[in-house]
Structures are given as structure tokens and as C-alpha cells.
Image 1 (cartoon, one colour):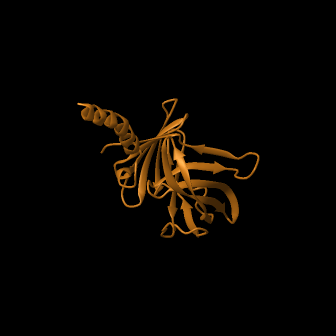
Image 2: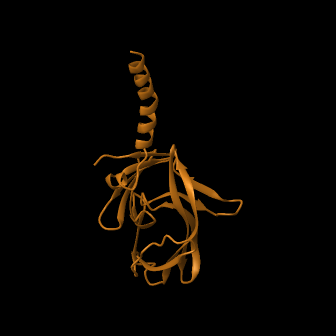
Image 3: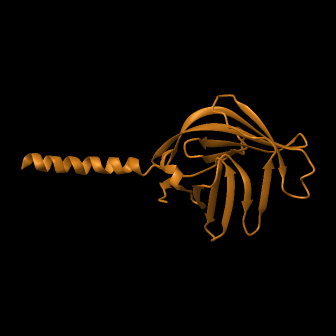
Length: 193
């Protein structure tokens, strides 16, 4: 009788820990999709075809935005009621997982006013670290993203990118300055197919 009670008590202690770990999406379960959330948005990530990830962002004011990204690292297109953005990479892209690796991706914005200019996206892996999203922890690469138009920088930010999830878990703008801002997620949940 005492053994049975001790066993039941042990189950009560262990089961929450097991389910606690099961709530964290992994490389395998991410193929079914997952939600990331912060105070301003809920983002649903689902694999599309090939290296493309479909992301639906829902904002507090019921506004929705649809993004198609390359492995969750950079946007190929974004659309909402007030924004349309799309690019066409001119070169095949294979992300590296080596520290210091850099890749320049020439692309064409699919916009008649900007398509005649030369555009590039340069991605450089600067660091490897562990990032917490809620109670889940993920190994990420910090990748600096520099967008140039005609050789002049138009955008600079860093991504904390999880190759297991194919998702950018946070973006850092104006890094290293007094204006530095980190936009990340504080909650993650697996989705069922």
C-alpha cells in the first residue's frame, strides 16, 4: 500500500516535468507548425514547399500579415492590407552553420520603382548562443543581415535564428548603439497538423 502511494506521488512529480518538456517544439515537431507570441503579435509558422516557411502574423487590432520566408531566416514576401513586398533571389542560397561564414545574395525587388537597381542581402554568422522562449531553450545563430541598394546600406539588423525550427526567434535593430531594440517572442507552442 505504501509502495503504491509512493509510486503515485512520484508520478505526480515526474509527469508535469515530462509534459513541460513536451510543450517545446523540436526540429521534428516543428514540421507540424508552431506558434510564437509576444505582447504585440501571434505568429503561426508552417512549412510550405521546399525551403519556404509560411508565417501568419496576427496583431492586436485584428490586422493580419502573411509572410513567406526562406527557411524562416529572411522574407521573400510580405503582404497585409497596407503592405506588399516581394523579392526574387538571383542566386541559390544555402545557409552556412559556420562561425564567421558570410553569404551575399543578390536579389530583385518585385517592385517596378526599385527593380532596376542592384540589391544585395549579406548574411554573416557572428555568434552561436542559447535563447529562451518562455520555458523552452534553443540553440541559435546570431546572423547579421545587411541590405544594400546600389552599394549603400539601407537596412541593418541581426537575427537570432534557430536552424532546428527554421525560425527567427528575435531581431536586434541598431545593435550596439543607444537605440538598440530587441524584438523577440516570449511564448512558443507546438501545433498539430
